[in-house]
Length: 85
Image (cartoon, rainbow, N blue to C red; front, side, top):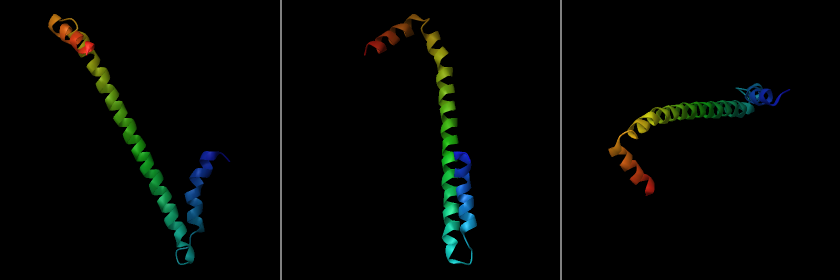
């Protein structure tokens, strides 16, 4: 069995070990906790990926603006002053 399939089977095996009317209801809570933690981690990862794509698109779209500003003498001199500091 591969590693990923054993990891995904852990909450399922916890659910099978649990008994609703028995002493082992803790296994149900453990399985639910594993599902919640994995789900929240996946959502957070998707959020970070989307945020990084948005930031990258903003940076790439602002690049040509600064290239155009180099054509004009007034903005070129201020960019040279800013790069010395």
